[in-house]
View 1: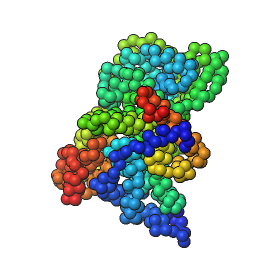
View 2: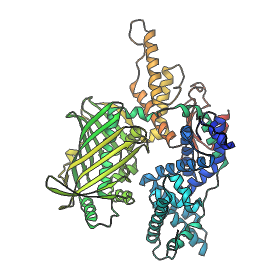
View 3: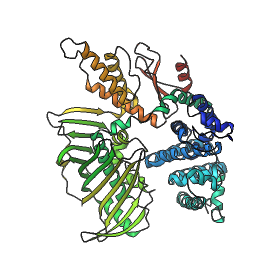
View 4: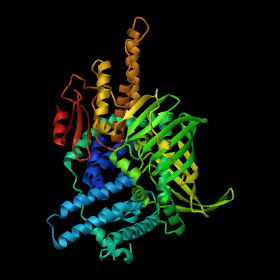
Length: 196
Length: 426
């Protein structure tokens, strides 16, 4: 699919994508169709809704700038947005300063959340916090693979399509990412069973 | 995956998220997208490009990159290799280092650009960097440990510039441990060994290091490059016999053009002797201020407001039509030409205040940076004038979810999303 390349097998969304190259209303419709997906993905990578909203804005502005170069089907469009979102989040997390700030913010919010909790609930919250912090400490590309696989519930072949890699590479990246995560968790929770 | 990771997969599958979309944000973003649709689809280049084209900005950016990457490379770890751990320990223990650098930039609109650098980094004092073009000292910059200002002297023009550092920048620059922490996540590849001038060197290569992390002056970099617009491949070579770094090379490629910059840093003198006089950043007599960037005023919008007030004063109460730096320069040129045309003796009736125009350009460039970061900037300069006291002239989103608004009378207020919607509906 491209802005000048209609085919006779176009779906409604295919047509919409073509129209969105030049028509603001069509772009707005596409935006409404995909906002939730993009926002949730950003929130599951950044663990902060304000930051996720900011990055979501970046994603749709980038999509608006580049939609003329999109070639593919409606399903491909969703993956194309995932790719833009992955790059936008990775850009955001690329500086260690921002990663450190995200980890600090998460810790502050976690401390608020633990006020008043007790026993197993408190322990669960603390584990959740440590896992999220460990994810933020990973290289963004590793964090992306984990998020797409476990939080977005995607198959390796879909992740490969989004990240422009082959499935075998993704499989090995995922394995490496999980090893890195295990190392981070072991360092954060040396006396717990969570990553054993 | 497999049984090896089953336990960790279970932990991940149990995670909960605060990821319910907010309808108010969705509506606001949609409105912003619609407002910007025509402009964004037709825009070819961002205003950062204009700043980048200026030799000084490019040079300053490259200078900052050299220090940032250099410091980053020599301290990063997680290698598992005894020799690299030793490199890290040695470097971390040094109090001062001197070095030289060469920069070659190609593919830009100005053709090839070359400069040479001499740098000095001392834990007790801060950093000093001299930049030479064709053998002439073009600039001398200081970021001092005990100061909050990044000072650049331009001997050829007898001018100087000042850029505020935040307390965070200042502390980071003075704390090597924080720098180490920033680079712990880096991955690299071994490059093997090579012999140069009888020295056996061993190297590593990485494209995973932010060239500017933790170094003051990043505002200059942001203005020059635009965040996320460069890809960096760096190589570090150390002397196998001594464990001291002897050369760092950086290949910096803009991802949105053919522009490429190669930086080679060498001639290191580890534990160089330094004196306080080497870091004397006093402004010589006769030097004039070229520009001053106060981050607090820039980020609050006050610097932009000052520039907008001046622009409206010389333009019959109208603000610039856009906040593109290129457009602003064009509009100021038009105002000046019209004033000159009205003059009867051939001399312009209007003298442009360069300081105020710099305020306006700096403020506008900062808004461009916020826009690139997705901060939902919307500017209504085409319809709102100084007479429209209570109409929204400009707004952008703050980190905590509220919006900063500059009104037609140039007062600045922070408002909630709901209040913003009301104001913009008016």
